[in-house]
Image 1 (spheres, rainbow, N blue to C red):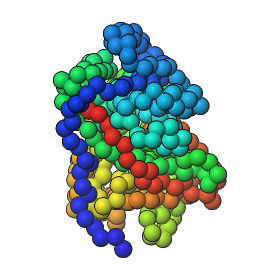
Image 2 (cartoon, helix red, strand yellow):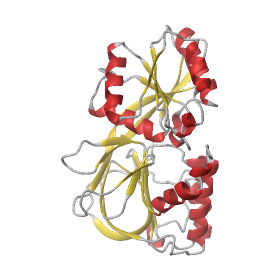
Image 3 (tube, one colour):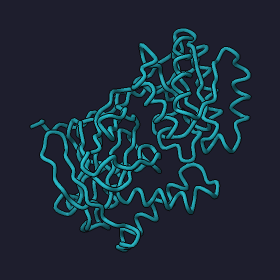
Image 4 (cartoon, rainbow, N blue to C red):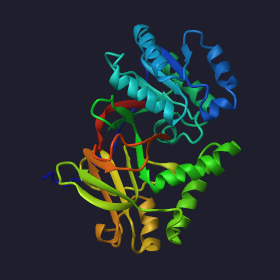
Length: 338
């Protein structure tokens, strides 16, 4: 059995460019932020004619763009899109392997919610973040922080290529996504306000036991080498991010695994007492498996389920209820944060 040790914080270091670095910008024009207008980003890029820039929204085209960036020796890859775009880039990088050495990634807050960017991306607005990044890459005048993070690999079926991302969710999380899409997203709200309202809806439904909105989902769960168990789960998430929406950190495991796994059972007890600690990633004396709260750091998760699930905002259905969705540590990438 794996020895339980304190999870090491993600590797981060201050880095200053010693020479001019080759930058490529990949833009998804259909991401939430870019649909509102991309002119400000284009104006920044207009002043940097040596920066490669390509619009793409199809995964097949994305792979060819990354191939081209690799041939032109791009060292810093800027992702101008939302969480789904980051997931598509990571999937292409790990499956197609266009780069001999993975480029440094820089993520702009250009999505509807941009959960990944708010954890590992460039600070501030997308234009200010891009300006700082280009100043750093061109002259080394700006010091930045390199964050090295693990990536989540999701295998839905044995004969399908895996997907790579940073946040997986199922159960009541799916109801939250549907609530967001129906009631909030179409109103044009961006940033963390919309997801914050969704979290508030979820918590109120949880506190007041609104089973019409939060239906426990039966699934069979296997963690690492342990035997799988079938249970009803209200909500389940797996992430390699440090923070989620509004800075919440709903995981408190202390094992050495790189995947943060948290599950809330069908009938969680002492919810009002446990909730404040749970959202801050702190242990609570009532936050135990016996009371319906499980949080562990693992290397592999096997989920046999019949319900939908999400990877970085993209929705999926299980291949077959008898074929488990397998989540593994997919490797590491480095993000620039300046």
